[in-house]
Image (cartoon, rainbow, N blue to C red; front, side, top):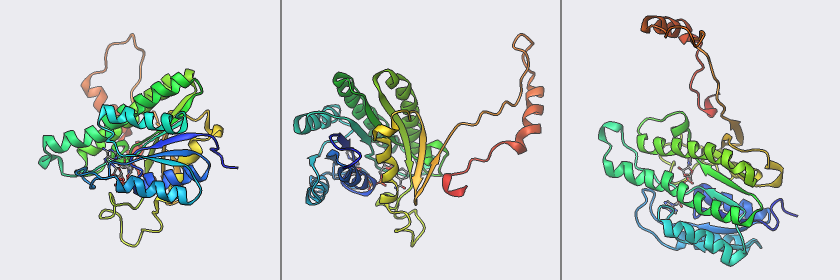
Length: 291
Ligand code: NAI
């Protein structure tokens, strides 16, 4: 008995890296999986059927159920087509993992409009388009659902040279929090995952010799658990997962200056005093692996 027997899942960008690992584990737990992948290069150029087909073959060889989809998440018709593939092949859609992604890193000084647009288009707009198509289908079915959107500490905390990517990934986290609130009445949970894994996207930025420690398979169990019935009350959360560590990234609210709202506004001088007297006790912006 798998934890996801009878469920139908879509994983975008599942032809390699993290998406492939998520798709294989979802199938191992009994879900029928639509394996989407554009099959292009790391920077989003090109496309082919081979990546999605290879993962579908792997799932089938292991005794699972899978279907391939080759559409781009940033194309509205293709995004709807992915959900259609799930419905036409397996009868419904219960789980949507928005994972597809590309990189065009540059310091902000050297960033071009084209580099900004293409990264925001695939990550933020692509997540929106697929989530929206999945949302409409899940509401029509009336049985709730699971959406997991892939963010990054680049967006949630910050990373040099990734202004386009970080902005898109922070946008995805914001979208997730709103959908979590709106999904409550439909039984749809929506969570954010910020992974850390060795893949073609990160192989030149991860420390050498970390390939096994940072295997994508060490991220997927957290994703798959969030798709189970046991996770029905977990929504609107930001999880980081990598190297067998799962962390919850939560907000800490520190009141720095406070007085009665009917009083006169603070002066700039007073604000400065409050800021400088507390600044050493502000929480540090640490990434989960630095804790
Ligand atoms: P990857 O490059 O191995 O996987 C991304 C997949 O998305 C590729 O197979 C690619 O063909 C597919 N893809 C790209 N554009 C597409 C489009 N328009 N439509 C459909 N498929 C498309 O990289 P990785 O590392 O597995 O990344 C997966 C996700 O995790 C991405 O969203 C990435 O930003 C995110 N992430 C990864 C981290 C890591 O440490 N590997 C860290 C933080 C976030």
